[in-house]
Image (cartoon, rainbow, N blue to C red; front, side, top):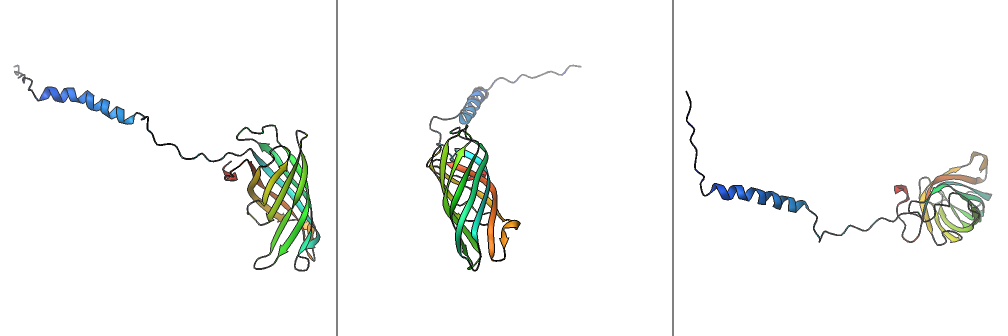
Length: 198
């Protein structure tokens, strides 16, 4: 036995609904399309000229401590295995600055060693550069302020993180005679960013 099917005539209301469906879909897709008046992107974070491994040694003569609060500083600041994230100086990979200056000890409220001076070194390319440095030697502290004063990247500021360790062979009964310093530094032209991001 066959069931009769009833065909419903198209009502005037059903046609506009079907015709409206593609229009709704197109409108929805239009919402996903980029507009010509999109909000501008935020300022770009600065990218360093160089990122290098820090390998340094500073020596105090005489040793610094409660008796001697100021002494001569000698040693070296080495920047090794450098790479250039912004492509400004891909040829520069290593330099060791021979440094000299003044070391100071402050005992209140926390014992603090600080250094200030200048250094001269030769890049792996043979170019000579010079450096100014000043700041504290504290565990996990920012690298003392440093500025390239001549040679490649002259004018660049340097920041980063350091781990200074008193050398066991440099501890004197009268105080501390030297530190080994390890860490990472970045060279920046203009605004300095966060070195650990690179």
